[in-house]
Length: 134
Length: 286
Image 1 (cartoon, rainbow over the protein chains, first blue to last red):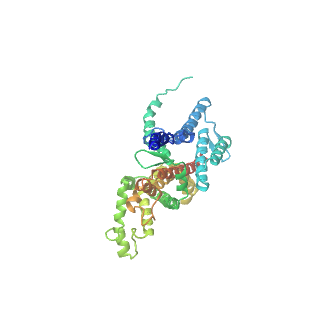
Image 2: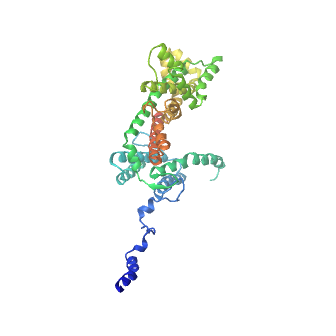
Image 3: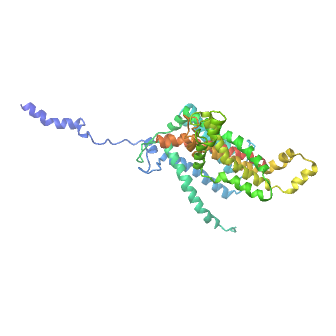
């Protein structure tokens, strides 16, 4: 009889120690940088921003802003004849670089799947090539 | 050195705001949607580049893109030479100039969905003038709700009917801007009609034809309303062009993620081809 009473008295403590007290309470989610990068930035907003897509646009508009600054410093657009036989200004080279990068990504994704490291390197190389040679 | 009046920038501002709201914000939203999954209620889940992979490897997308390219290049091959020929045949002065111009402008004034509906009725086998004539009078089976070939012929005829006028008007504008002195010089040299066309008229029309080809390419590559009203993409999927397929994915199936990825691929193709056309055709002008 006494043993049963002890058992009943200690049961809650044992259960708590085993973690039964946490049943039904939301689990504290671990912070990971990946999650931080891709989670909705403004929850419930229809434009559906994430940090990853925001960074994409910051990159493109940043590039354009740098172009504007360079244009203010050295006006005239630095026109020249490139290896493609086209007369290009700085802006043209950026356009060709970005458009080409889009195709690099699409081709890679279509052929080999969604890994982005290789197309990223190829695109950077292509943009570099555009600014040096095209 | 501060010389110029910078007030012009303020006048450009409204346009900039307009473009931001009708082009830039939607485009950004599409980019955001293309890497996420949603079931409505503005809740989004990250999908990465999965939609792009799915679309790029899907048979359905390849087929729609193939149909789209076929449509666009067919109508370009018909409309550009036809438009130039009609412009050459039009009178240069006198009363008939205005008559011809008004007649040419008429198809352009008709709303797109009405054009689709008109051609739909026109080709119906029982009551349409063309459909009845073909089936009952000439004995050629022609029913675009049954035969893919008939559907394609109708879609292409409709586009040619609707948009050749644009090419005509542009080419005509190029033609009448050629000074009379060129023709006189050609006559003195005893140039044939073909030489006049090849060495005087065509080079002078080059700029407007560039614009015509660009406009017709972009418009026909993005065409939606007319074939949608006319055939609805059928019979089966035979006239489901890229835009019709896109709307099916986005609004029919409510797959906003794949639809966004698809529209971005669509956008990049339009952008590249337009740029290529423009660059190649204006390359030798500098």
